Length: 339
Image 1 (tube, rainbow, N blue to C red):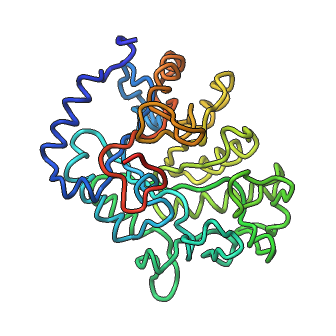
Image 2: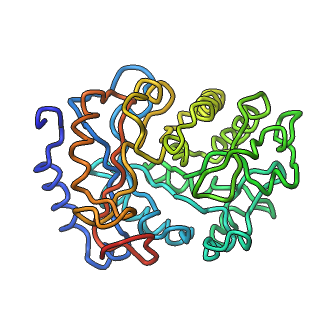
Image 3: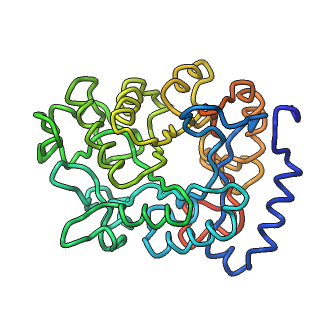
């Protein structure tokens, strides 16, 4: 097992010790550091040719510390810490997780009250109150300016989405950009994510592919480098939507890393997911507890056997993902924390 890991625990511990010494406790409390814990770091060298994610992506994600409430100001503060403190150790991705298009994220528990920011083609766009740089000359230009700022620091920018097409877009039957289709042609209203009420599933047809093509083209224009797609790799596994997203990324001609969630992805699907994505979750969400305390509070101790099982399959551009490891204070709006 030890031979399978290029960065052993003791090496990682030394690196984190140096990070903690360099970072003030005040910043730590404001930042809620996390690691993308990617299994089997392996004896991997960057492969020749345009391989996406030749090494396991590492970075910071907004979810554990901010949930649905992240703002441009808070994100920028954390990007500053990522760039100045963690980038030298290989942490390069800054990812805005779920809910960036919600105008009233505090109402998530009452879905009928949620208000969404959409463009004329039915695609989610950032809420301009929480992300003011999205507005330029009265138009919502998405995350272009935020992505450019992240890139200027030598980092990469990512976002989270839930698979599918917005239910509001379907109800209004908005047009699918750059196609002859409308939202109702692409939507599968018999299929929805079991925990999310915002989207319908997408049909495996020409309209469905046109929808994902328009979505990924938008993200490419924004400068997205990393796309985390949720409710797609388990409960249930959605191979047709994964394939459509994979094709859309290829058409965009932008090197966007595709990360599939949630877990656990079935071990028998390893070859299938590896052909279409760079990362896939192998577990449910883990939190800042050592041992599992309830059905929703999964502990870190459950990850070791999973890591060992998946380790032999690790390759450049093919990484099984054991979820984020929460470090330090999770706040100001933690989704779930033992702190």
